Image 1 (tube, helix red, strand yellow):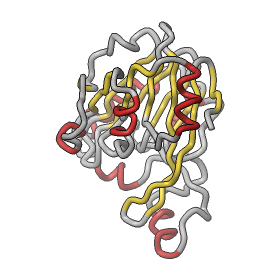
Image 2: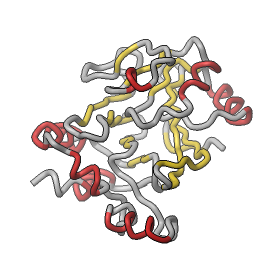
Image 3: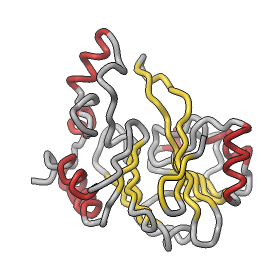
Image 4: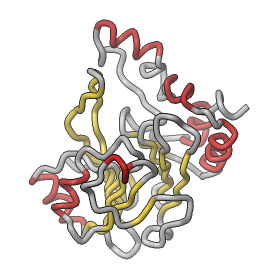
Length: 229
């Protein structure tokens, strides 16, 4: 289930979830930090097999939901790894009051992973504030929902029409139109994206869509050309 994606980073795909009748695939990443501990990005459903594979890599110390939408399986992971620190992106504390959050995921560097990862909050969006990560050893930038891509046959009926209009089935991974329209503070978002575009990205990982495995910096420039003018 776990697949190597580069130096000290692995990915795993989970079951689909449903939001307003739209089915979304799920994906997480496991990053082994310099000290040997593991960071879990966007946790998916935790099975016994997946847990065994994760435990074989190291000790889980950080559980990171990257935005307020990717939290469905967070409680299961916290119960499985009670010693791991759980990081709250903006808006998630209020939504999941039963979860014990140890730290907030804000603008400041996080000491636990600062040697391996950069992160930037992309603010000003009415849907969610997403934390975008850059994993230095693999030169991978990790997006959750701000970039998506689905096969044209993934949706059926009226949902297929909506997905096409929303740019979810564009020729290459794209920022869905609903997220573009939800940016009410574009100057703040533009500043964050410029920071992301400066990273020496080789690969781009997203929760919903096949990864981009080469020339990631040029791809991101295309994906955000509508915002960076």
